[in-house]
Length: 95
Image 1 (tube, rainbow, N blue to C red):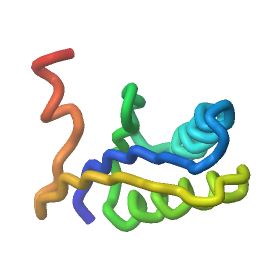
Image 2 (spheres, rainbow, N blue to C red):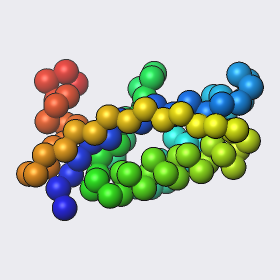
Image 3 (spheres, one colour):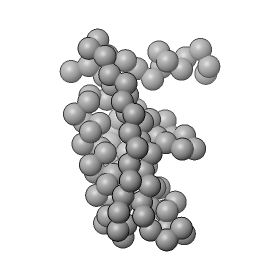
């Protein structure tokens, strides 16, 4: 299956002081996945097979709920093409 990019912005509905710790738990879950990723100030972009990336979104939701979120809002963007697309091909001129 070709490589795709998925950007995830996750917004757990919790008290303000709990937002960053929950987002940090989601980022840790992404880190342990072994997938290539880049953390940005507003979202994290992950590279992998589309099914795997969509599973990561589901797991991110579960991490937040298990952490006490009464609701989780996720904004995702997906870049997919049949031959695959990498983060490096889009960002290499700027790094």
